[in-house]
Image (tube, rainbow, N blue to C red; front, side, top):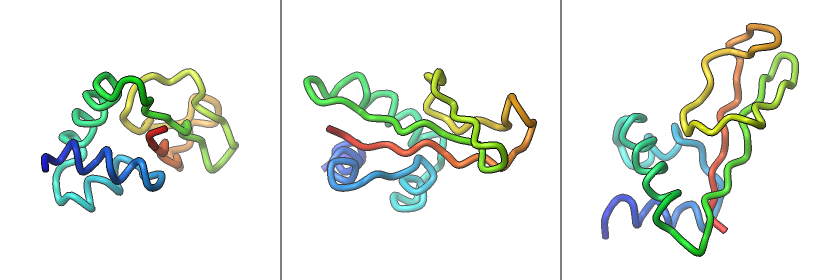
Length: 90
């Protein structure tokens, strides 16, 4: 079974962040981000559901963000205390 197939199985069972997946599969965050982008396009009719990232300081929610990677800082308060988006498959 390929890593992408394993990621799909993992995300069907519970929500994970990209960093959690990178740690679990012992690979780089960059590779996981690439895998997630590919999975999002290839799992039709299922969907890669993304729970948006948010700022822990001011609670700003990154609703309009389409990138898979974690934002670096909050546009509202400039804090770098960001909770990464969570991924699941439904």
